[in-house]
Length: 153
Image (cartoon, rainbow, N blue to C red; front, top):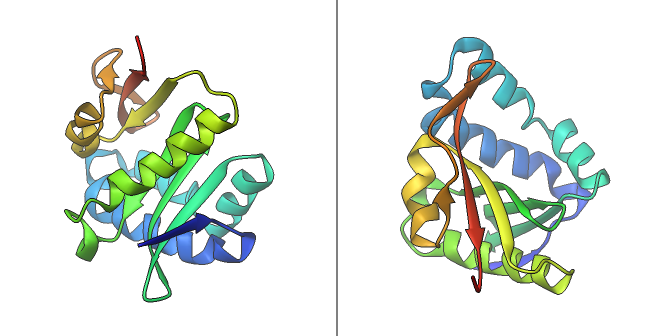
């Protein structure tokens, strides 16, 4: 997997990847309104807005196509992390996370990260050292588990 910083021209492909995966693996846990809210936040226009607002996106390419994406907010919050279904289980999410984490640290993060995990992603984050800061929560039909990683403590 070739990992690079995303550019605005990647927004549509990023949106397509994360929307399809979210419909299949995440939105089913949400209310109809929660699913609509989640999926609307993943439209191309939203991705472009996140980029303009300083979210850092990296994409992972295989054979010239985006097969994975990771985004961080404020050099401390893991915002998006998705790998195409056909490539899951190959270690690509770990590679994407390492690149994003190292970019955050290079930009001044001292080793504190947060993520609002989907229900099915908790175990992956736990393997990387994230710990739940509270149990499952629901807001406007969106369900997540807030988690935190402290490196070196």
